[in-house]
Image (tube, rainbow, N blue to C red; front, side, top):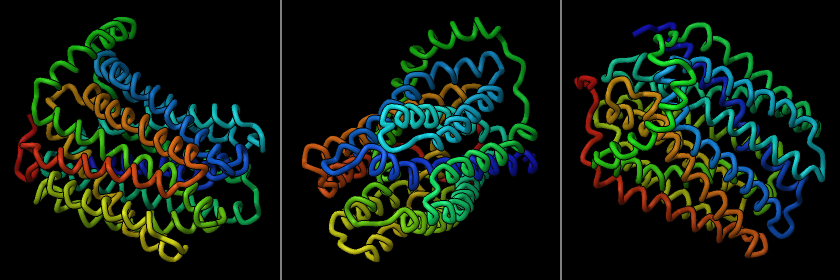
Length: 410
């Protein structure tokens, strides 16, 4: 294993976590929904849900063909670079969003999220190149753990700006942290192998091959059922992440600095969860870890419905955090065990397609439920719990996902 490249890979998780921690998870989502749009009757929930749904639909539709293009044209690293700095630029421009700038704020949220989520397709595809099968679970978990550390650092840097009410400074700081800390990945990750086709030819083949790849996936029972399960439980995770700060602010009265403190605690607990579940993912298998954490997520959603105080929500958030790191790392490892050699970017494109397709529905369901019930977010959170339950039932029937230690890559 190339340790330098592996460290650079985990540092990219540190970098992009600044975006997710400050933009969708805490400051920007709350600022946009409650201050820019207004959320007296759930309008802010609706517009924020629409921004998430739109961006995820774009990523879902583009990820599979772009993944195939990256495999055939040898441009994976260049795509990772381009999408990363599109997101960085959109984050910096969020400093210009003021009260009433509903469309401009929505547009930047979409562009920033598309860049962030699109880059993850190519980032994930490096995992099989950086570690043997018996260590992929640990490296995946370590990447998430370093990412949660990055989130904590970003939140710590954002807190002084939030306390001063300087939202523009918060977004500019986040863009700088994301852009600078991503640089080691572009320096030390291995270069792409020579492409077998020109970029033009790869574009043509990428779009036509997408349909053929989908047919192959549908013919593989384990992969098909895993992706269907992932469709449901990732929907729940995405929705919780994208609406947690809005829920805390609207339903429980959290201020922006309190939301940052809350998410800081979540990141530390997620780091601990990802780290502790890394070895069990290899020894017991990713399926075991995913099932245990899905039970935990069902409990989290049920508890969130009943919370009445900020302290109670802090406790629920810590429980959610320990499950967040574990299930994301184990799911990524699960996927690597099902991918044939040479199809990493393409099939991780479908992995992104499933995850982002799920995020089309969850945020919109939450936003619509809140809007139609006059801002009752407790009703909305109950609907999201059903996604975790469906994922648990489906993943239990997957005949794969056993221990990865000692296995050979196909």
